[in-house]
Length: 452
Image 1 (cartoon, rainbow, N blue to C red):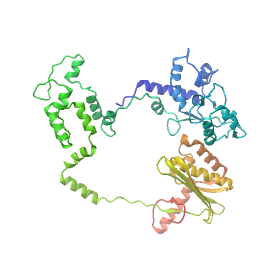
Image 2: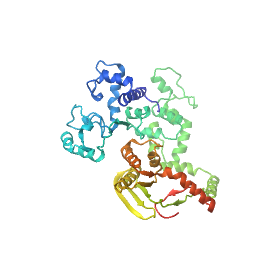
Image 3: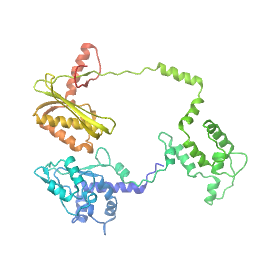
Image 4: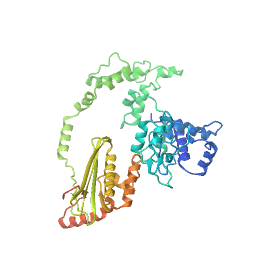
């Protein structure tokens, strides 16, 4: 009905305490660590003889830990107990998991995964997953970063933790017919009361041992006020039901109230909608037709053009797309010199992915190629506003793409790279000059080739 459980809200708040305990360094977290986790990893700590707060934190620990992803920087995360693979703690998902304090960096030798040792500890499928998807590079002096997987941006919120750990009841089909988006809440709530027989009619009050005069005040017959009588068999209810049900071809004879409601739900919606359409006046339909013919949409246009880079610069245009989102995806990039001649182009399928992943892969592969060819001055143009703002650090990094985006940012930092944001002011100036000269207007977008 929209009322949140106080028990679930309390658990969400204790989930926040567990997140703070695991990811932040403070006097409180240090005290709790030394008191309860001095000899054990927090995942294995017990709650015997502990305070009420610690017991509540242990209660939500498993749900919260599964949503914490430890991105490897220095490699200090626990190999068995921490979720650094995005699959969950290896102690729980691998059959040979052991309570051994091993850090991830101990499985990395000379910047490469120690394949032989990984194969001794893990199944072959998990070894392949780690080698293919997790880079073995370590950043000395940088603590491993904790990301919250309960939302897109990777930052913990009580709201997201509430939805992660709440105890959802089984959904029934009738709920979807009552709680409808856009329908006023008071109508849905009243309908729910009818369906669950929570209306204080005489028969309901009698079951509650409340003594009242058994009489229906909505009709002249003086019958007992029951749910069935008030909403189905009373004269005014019969009149309403016959008016609408007959138009839809539904018979109301010999059925109970809930049965009739269920029949109405199951009846094809197109016939019920036609009832209201047929009742409209011809003048209203003619007015709608006149209004639609008089409507003229406002047209917007944009100038699309591509400019050559300056001398000693190369221009890299990238793009990514998917058939659905997510769906079969591919990326592509093309690199040209200051004369506009093609240097290199590449396009590859990447399988099932989202549009964002395809855009990121295009930029990542382009920057990797530029590094192999030792291009120092690069103009990078991409077609994703979200990716552009993330790369220039105006928007937060989605945790799903944190590693690839950080690799791109590191490549950009090593080169003299101009991105869309750096070029925007200069290109807008040129566009304004064109507009004054030719009387045109609009906002330009980058194109892969040719003039607009």
